[in-house]
Amino acid sequence: MEKDKLALRFYETIPSTLAALEGVVERLLTLARDVKCDHHHLERVELALREALANAIIHGNQQNPGKKVAVRCFCQPDRGMLLVVEDEGSGFDPGRVPDPTQAECLLDTHGRGLFLMRRMMDRVRISRRGTRITMLKRLASK
Image (cartoon, rainbow, N blue to C red):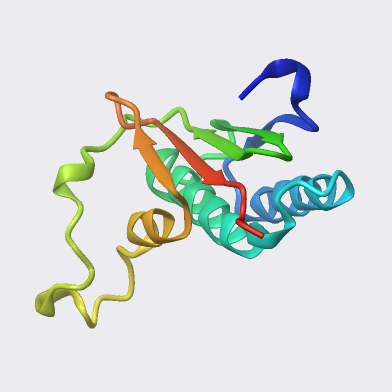
């Protein structure tokens, strides 16, 4: 993404509460709609963002409101959106996350967040420490 062409630069740090999750998602999506940032895929972006934030809050920071979650979003209308969610937890190994489509996991009531993020976004990267997830959604073809 080219800095001088960004229509949206969003950065916010929130406490590790589910109420804060709702607020930051609404603020970010409102801004994205206002600048017409890849509006063809905002539903997918919203789902991936909610899952990444929920994982950071619940699993990463153990819902400790004293720990923060950083949310960044950059949008270049002719290219797409880049989202980054980072927590203060101890991290995780994505290789140890079970595949929710396997027969033994089908009835589980959790464990689908990373799977959904990967389905909704074009690229998902997890930092080596497992405390930051970076997601890219390319511009919708018209």
